[in-house]
Length: 233
Image 1 (cartoon, rainbow, N blue to C red):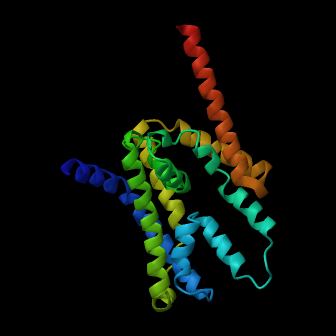
Image 2 (spheres, rainbow, N blue to C red; image 1 turned 90 degrees about the vertical axis):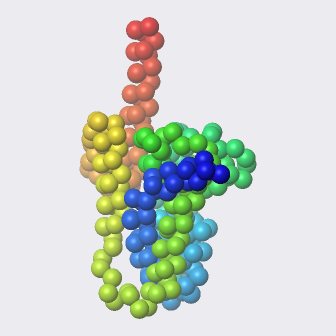
Image 3 (cartoon, rainbow, N blue to C red; image 1 turned 180 degrees about the horizontal axis):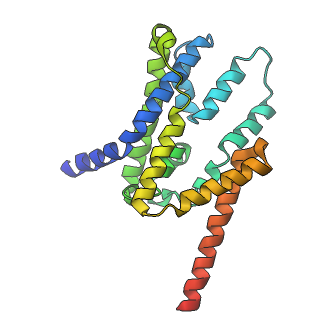
């Protein structure tokens, strides 16, 4: 029992910085839900069933648009916005999770924050149960923020500042922590280079091109490193 409590405290401390970004952004989403004319319970419905951050904002706009949006347009938008999640599966330690239901949830809840936290120590060393606990906590932050924003949104909407910077700030903090843990800025600088190239050559599909370049480069670097290790052995 004490070991379980200690394990949960480790996960809670690990995810706490994400709460400072996810909860305010969830509040902003909840406020937008009620401002769009939907009932408050749509906020936890989006966060519980879709759970895709920025995509939820786009789907909310599509759901409340005066002109119906075709399913094909929704599918293409989803691919463009969340296509990067396919690459996350390459290194996310889902093999540590036991049981089909837990694995299914692990795949469903594989968001940017979960991937970032498990990319560097100490998140890289989490056990299977800790991974699922981490993902549950992250979704709780998001859904809880949405409920808070939707239920009290009418009272606070006029007093809320622009929260569009929160998600960017969150990932800036995560990237900074990754540099500190790895003691190297090589990967963030390479990611920045990929982003600049994608912005210049394909601004309309910026995210997919940037992620594709980043993955291709890291896979190529890994393959080169393996060949060099075999050659030097």
